[in-house]
Image (cartoon, rainbow, N blue to C red; front, top):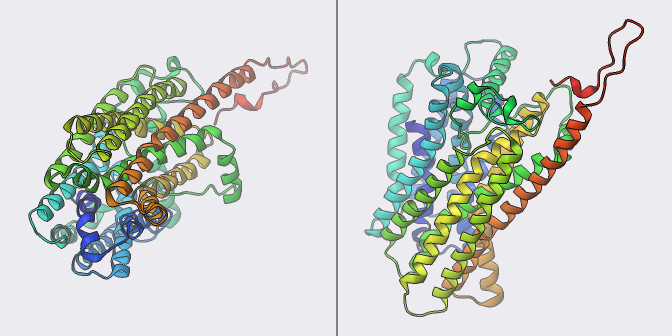
Amino acid sequence: MGVPMFMAYNGGATAATVDTIQKVGGWSPTGIGLLGAMDKIGITMSAGIWGYILQHVPSKVLLSAGLLVNAVSCAVFAITQNGYLMYSTKMLIGFTEGLQWVWAPLWVARWADDEKLPLWINLSGCVAAGVGNGIGMLLAGSSTANGLPYAFPFQVEAAVLMLLFFLMITVPADRLAITSCLKVDQVKNEIIDADKRIRSYSDDLMNIDHPPSRQTSEAKGRPRLRSGSFLHPVIVAEDMSISQQLEQLYHNKIYCRSAMAFASANYVNAGLAFIWIRLFIQLWSMAKQLSVVSYLVITGVGGALGISISSNIDGGTDARLTLIFLRKAMFFSCIGAVMTVVGLLLQLLNDEIFFIFLTLTWSGIALLCMGIASTTGLIQIVCNNSVEDEKLRSFGVGLAQGINNFFGNCFGPLLPQMVMDMLIGLLALNEAQSLFAGAVSVVCVSFAVLGYVATALTAVERQQPAQKENKMQAVPEDTADQQPLLHPWCCNY
């Protein structure tokens, strides 16, 4: 867990030092937003590459080289103030971090038994990412608030990653391997099987076609996987061209709307993390340490409540019931967004500091985060299982995560900063006004998530009656003592 944790640490450290970096380097809002997005761009670029390279290069060699490049990139990022070099190192940090998120679930699938698999996946995925991000934000925010340079938290990260590099060298190669095969085609098949095993846990939890009564009690009893931090290998079906696969996915309305809901929800998460500290320092003259702690507490409590509620919903094995729940969750999330905007606006219009407006804003954000956290895990399962063809599903899962990384995690830090830059140029807004506009551009995307969930629900409701009608068609009687004619939908591969 140490390696993915301290790689995720970088994102939290960047969000907590962005105000200091901006002042020291004189960055424009768009420039600083792009800096925050560069590691996510690197992760997005790597999603379609590492799965292929892992088929040809031993895992230990690849992981060691990636960890070394990541540690060196962090060290260079800490000592330079050259914008282009900072962009390049951030992209390398994200590119090598992507290797961990591809390798980790495949390694867990090989070494964990069925009982331990969900626990290992959750610990090495969302738990490691969340803890690492929180530690990075807390350490970076506290150190810069006490007068230390922004380079300090990144120097700490580089030192820890270098120590982990030396420890990794001592680990036997077979303990890091994701397969025992030597031939490339056998390695590929084992990677595919491992990825299917991971996804089968969510596949059993929800099925688009069948009601909950058709699910097994064993599947119902399994804990829900939250592997959203991972990158599934992008595996292209060999019997279809990429254009044919893209066309099929494009015409799958449930898939497209669920994928966009997933990406939009993570856009809100990423955007809030990147703008939070500067927003509350500017509007409420809040101490930086308090701003950092408030972010961790409020988003943490809201997110934990959302995850807890979504993990225990009734009818969780049915896509329609799940989407109905998510529609309700996002309705409350949108109420939270309105409360947030009202609280920010009331404080912006007043010169004095009013804590009642702060309470309203924080309550709105907690409600917003609760709905978003309820949505991200479940909507990903709906998205994955909306693709019935197993070969096409492997490609669809990887593509959905690419959409999430690009439109969600990359645009979250970048787009609000571009909005701020544009409004400063057009309307001559001051810093507080521009930060308010950037925050509005983040929280209002919750309405887009609600729209995508509602339209996905409509698509599911239209699909289920059609499938029932097709399955009820009578099989023609075979009077010639031959095999009966089978309707295409009778064969559910």
